[in-house]
Image (cartoon, rainbow, N blue to C red; front, side, top):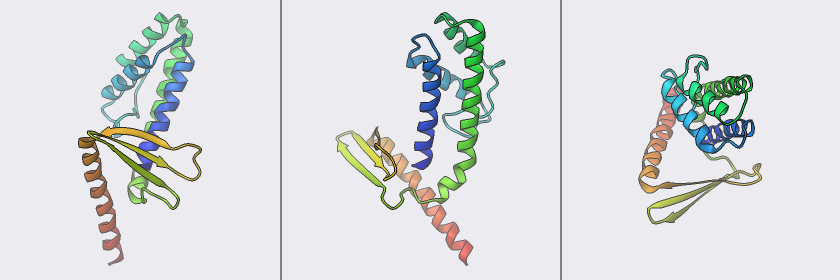
Length: 169
């Protein structure tokens, strides 16, 4: 859960950066760049963020540059925006990849955390809150995806238990 929440906040910061630097840019511009750039970066271990994208050789970055210019942003400023968002995305992806082991070894819930699940037929709404957060993190997903996530959680959780047992033997 911590890894997904951290990824969400990283992506949110990237979208805020891009959308605040454009002349009335819309979310599809950011989403298109994010998905295209991740597909181009074959070395990234993160499922969403890049870790080694190069703006000068990336078709996704070239498309973003053209979209920024078509939106009335001067070429030099558009190039700076593309370079900065790539730098921020690569850094965020590297940070998440570096923390992956620690996310797997820690308990997903801490004292005072709450995870509420509401069943809406084929869809579930999960609300995750921590004492130190001002407002909870809320998301919806279909039941099939929830079952896959639950199975993955138990694989990781059980593996962590097993490794602790083997270390203490």
